[in-house]
Amino acid sequence: MTSCVLIVDDDPVACRLLEEIVRKHGHVPIVAQGGEEALAVLERDDRPVDVMILDLVMPGLDGMGVLDRLRGCADAPPVIVQTAKGGIDVAVSAMGAGAFDFLVKPAAPERIAVSITNAIKLGTLQTEIARMKRTLNGTMTFSDIIMRSPAMDRPRELGERAARSMIPVLIEGETGVGKELFAHALHGSGPRRAKPFIRFNCGAISGDLLESALFGHEKDAFPGAGARHIGKFQQAHGGTLFLDEIGELPDKTQVKLLRAIQNGEIVPIGASQPVRVDFRLIAATDRRLVDLVPEGRFREDLFYRLNVFPIWLPPLRERREDIAELARQFLVRFAAEQGKKGLDGFASKTIELLMASPWPGNIRQLENSVFRAVMLADGNELKPADFPQLGLPDAGAAPSPPSPLVDTPGAGQYAPLSAESPVAQARHMLPAPVLPGTDFAQIPHYGATWILDKCGDVRNFGALEEEVIRFALDHYRGRMSEVARRLGIGRSTLYRKLKDYGIEPHNAKAA
Image 1 (cartoon, rainbow, N blue to C red):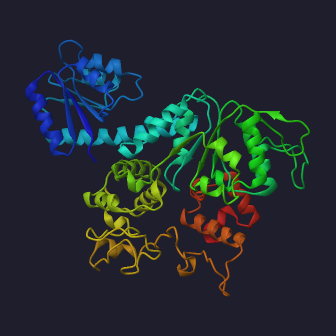
Image 2 (image 1 turned 120 degrees about the vertical axis):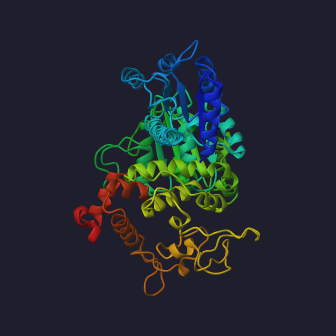
C-alpha cells in the first residue's frame, strides 16, 4: 500500500537520492528543505505523512528542534533521523527525543528501505491502537474513520454538522456498512464526548426483557425480575444512546420511546413515577422505515421524530477507494492479535481481488475475510489463496446478483476457475459464505450447525444457538473474548448461555 514519506534535509543532492529510494519502493516522497517547512507540511490535511526522514544538522530549526516540537504530539509520524556526524552520544540524544531509527550518512539504500518499512509498520499499529482507545473512551472522531472515497464526503459533512447539535440522528444503510462506528464518531465529535455512549440492539431481545433493558424495572416488577435494574436510558443520562436496528422495536415499545423523546422522561416497569432522562439519541437501521410506516409496522409519529436528520451510509461496493486501506487496518490489528509479527502486507494480486469483489456484507464481511486470511496465512503477505471464499470476477461479464452457492458454475457473480488457479486450489479449505437471499434449504451442513431436522423442518432456535456457540468455541479454540466478539454478545452473556446449555468452558472445544 502506498505510504507518504516526508524527507527533511537542506541538501538538494541528499533529497534527490532519498526521493529515488522512496519511489523505488512504491511510496510517495514529499520534500521539505528545513524544520519549519516540515512542520507546515505535517499540519496540512491534504495528505497524511506516514514516515519522516529527518536530517539533524540544518540551518534555522534543526532536527533536534523538530523532534522537540513533535514531542507529545499524538499524530506525529515515526521519525528516522540521519546525520553525517554520527556518534553514540548523538544517537542516544536523538532516540531519547523520540526518533524511531538513527542512520549515519551515507546509508545504504537497502538499510534506508528497511527502516522505512519498519517505521510504516509501527506507525500503522500505533494509529490503530490510538483509534481503538479513542473508540473505547468515547473520544473517537470522524478523522478516525477511513473515508477517502468521494461517496463518503456527504455523510461526513452531515455527520460533522449533526455532531454540533442535540437533534436525533437516523443512520441508514445496509448491514455491515459501519453505522455503529459512525455513531461513535458523532458522539466523540460533539459536546457530550466525555459522557457515556450506550449501545443497544433493539432486535436482540423481546417482551418484558426488552423493555426492562431499555427502561429498567423495579424490584420484583414481573416474574423473574429480581433486584431493581437501571435501563439503558438512565445509563445514558447526560450522554448518547445509540439504538441499533430501530426498525425491530415492537409497537408497544415504540410508544414508550416516543414519550421518552418528546417529554424527556421514562417510566421503569413497576414504577409509579416517571424518571427524567437527558440523552442524545442516535438510531440506526438497515431497513427503510418509510416503507414500514404504511404497512403499520412502524409508528408514523415516531418515524417523524427520528427522521429529523437522516444520514445514509453507502455500501462498500460504492466506495472502493477505501477497500485497500480498510483491509490494511484489519490486517494490522489481526496480525498483532494473533502474534503474526512477520505478516505485514498484501500481494498486488490480492488487492486486485479485494477491489473486484462485490462485498454484499460490506465492511463487516471484509473484516471477517481478512481475519480468516490472517489465520490461514503462513508467509509475510496475504495472497489470493488466503481468500478462498472470494472468486475472481469475470471482467467481461455484466454484474449480476450473488449466487447462493459460490461453487455453482455460471450461477452468479463469479466466473468458473481453472483447477490450477490458487483460489480454486485453496477453496476446499473453507465453506462458501452464506450470502443475503440464500435459500437455506440449499446450504450443505456448515460444521456442527444443522438448519433443518430430519423431517425437513427448521430446528428449534435454542438448539441452533447451542450448536453455533459450540462451533464458535471450537473454531476459536476456547478464546472466550474472541468468541463473544464474533457472536456479537458480551462475555457475561456468553458465560450465562454456556451455563444454560450445560457447556463447560474448560472442555468446550471437545463438546
